[in-house]
Image (tube, rainbow over all chains, first blue to last red; front, side, top):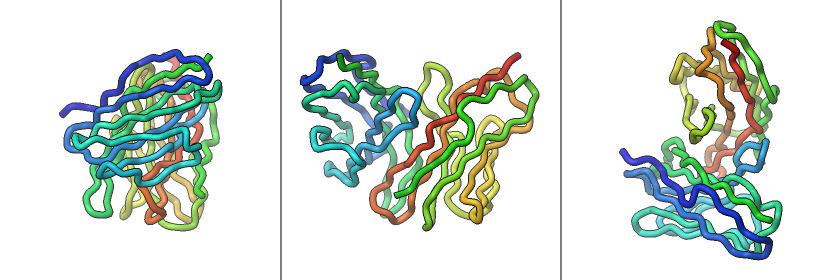
Length: 115
Length: 115
């Protein structure tokens, strides 16, 4: 089975710019979640997508937005970048059937540095 | 909102020593519990999970964890660690029925095993 893949692996942006991160789900999975992991912290939930719609959101401002495509791949967009947005961004996929979800499978992440 | 507390930031053990990593969560309802491991340079991997049933769950590589509902704890154990267990360990909780499937992670415990 193909695992979760993310691109790019590293990215450097300037404050105020916009960034798009990409994620391909593990084959057979239909749900994608995004997490932010700051240095020395555990991952924090940003949002989840199921059937191409946002299905839950953590405590992140609207400048964090996302998309899920029919093939279950996903994008995370961040506008008006701030220095505190520097972090590892993790994508995770899972299979949702009815009300049940399989455990999350994570990608290697995208390391975003905002200068 | 739920939260997860991991008691130790950094644990250093010699090979063959026994391991116990503490994890406590705060949430009054039903939870799913997880331990994830992140080996150096690799993605987060599921070590074990508890959904229901036997509170003692066994995972990969000889790890096990015990869910004690009265103590809101889910401690990770291994009788004899190996150098290859050097990694960062994250405890996570999902509040069942609280909306989307989202994990709340602890800050992680870094384990260093000395040969």
